[in-house]
Each structure stands twice: as C-alpha cells, then as structure tokens.
Length: 358
View 1 (cartoon, one colour):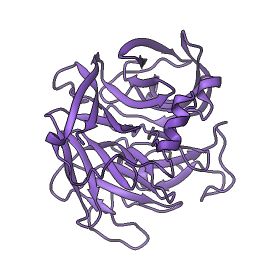
View 2 (view 1 turned 90 degrees about the horizontal axis):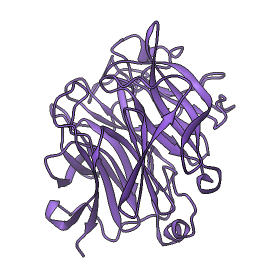
View 3 (view 1 turned 90 degrees about the vertical axis):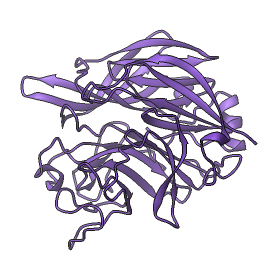
View 4 (view 1 turned 180 degrees about the vertical axis):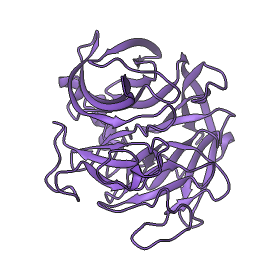
C-alpha cells in the first residue's frame, strides 16, 4: 500500500494516535526538495534487521508495520520489533515472488484494528491471490472476511500492491501471470488495476459496469500512489527492460503485451515514463510533497521522478534491492528485499530510516 504523507498537520494526527495509512495526503511535504539530493545527503539508521523478504510498509500512531512474504506482520515500535503470523482462511503460499504482499490500514485503524491484505494461496488448480480484511487486537492478526478471491497467481508475477484511494475505495494491482491474453481480457482479473469497496463490492461508478477492473493492459505493477491533485500513478515491471511509470485513469488500456515503452497503438496508452533499454524493477512508490519516490530492486536504490527530463534520478543507493518506501514526518523509511523471487541473493533484510542532513 502506498503511504502516509504527513505534513505538520498530519504529523500532529500521528502524535495523537490517528492512523495516516492512505496513499495520499494533500499537504505533505519533505523538509527540503529531494530532487537535488544524493546518497551522501542522508543520515542512515538501521531500525530493525533480520527481516524475511519484507514487502510493504505502513504506519499508525507510533508503530510501523511491515509484511513478510512468509505470512508475518512485523510491528516496530521504539526500535523494537515483534513478529505476528497472519491467520488466514486459505494458507499463505510463499512461492517465488508470491506470499503475503500488500497491506493497507483502515482509516480508523487505531480504534478498529482493521487492515487489508493481498496474499497468494494454492488450490488444486495452482496459485491464486486474494484480498482479505483482517483485524489486529494487539496480540494477533486474524482474517475477518475475504473481499476478493481467485485473482490469477504466478510464481513471479502477482502484482500485489494495495492502497486506499482519495475516494475511500481499495485499489489493487495484479500481475499478468505470463499469459499474454489476460491483460487485454477485461473478464480476467490478471494484469489489471482493480477498484473495490472496503466491503468487497464493485463500486457503482467503476468504468465497466459490474466489473472490478479500473484499468487494464498491465504487466506486473507493484507501485501505487496519488499526487496532491488526486492523480493516480502506478509503477510496473517491463519485460527485461521498459519498466514503466503510468498515469492511471479509469477504463484505459495500458497496452501490455501489445505495446510498451514509446510504442503507440490506437486505443492504448503510451507509457508516461519508461526505462528504455535499462531496468529499474520499480516496486513501491510514494509521493513526498510534489515529488514521486520510487523504490527499485534491480536499480538498487531509491529514485525520484524528474518530470522535466522524464527520467528517474537516484537519491540514495547502498547496493541493496529496495522494495518499498515510506515518507513519515521529516524522514524516509525503506525496506530492502535482497533475495530475488528466484531465490538469488542474501536472505536477511532491513528497515532503514533516512534523515536529510540539513
């Protein structure tokens, strides 16, 4: 899920125990523009380590929440961490890039304990994904209902990001599962951005009546965020290259697998921004003020969108693969996922805090 964006007003809400877990916030702003910053401009602190394939970061009150693909929710407070297994009606299938992925905290999480999760599960027919509601009572996480199930799954391509939009609905990214027909098939939930109510229903004003599909023609979108004007952006992995940042509008076709990069085809959207022959492997994204931050895996760093150059610029690199990024107050939090979905690389990961050197 994309992130709290606290301004001075929003930070006061955090200190008063109000959750800021939406993917948008109108007045959020960093202490300085990050566009001109580089690795040496940040003071770096390891908040916790020994994380196991972390995937999403959220915050509420004085706590930070991190999902781990194996099925745990890590709660971090005052530099200490506790790991809680998420109890689900369908077993969480931790295979490749699948498992417990995206998370979104309900608006009143501090009082209700309600959150939403996206996870992979296995049936006799193979891997699938679902969106569930769950509750945290301070001692355990437990599923309370299934909102949407039988989303096509894959060992590598599951999408997996959740966010609550400015309209209060849940937005969900799904992967193409390596089937070129499904992203263009509006009857399939694969290769899409979905929009559902917090009760699991189809919103009456969705672009296709009776359908959860909000936009289609996506490959493997893993980032989701809104700017101050309510414009929605998604980051997605390309096929070896041509990773994309796209401006999402309801009902539009973003072309995969028929076009990518600068290619054009009638009735399809050309990428807002793409990596050309390079590969970023973008995952979580977040707006900090007017600046879009992108956590990258293959790019091994945190980047900012340079709209004038229509490119991404590195603002922090440590040699780690970054899965998600969370602006919170005057600081930036990020999680590493150094082991690839194919099992390559080290298995220990960290939650770090980046503080601008003023």
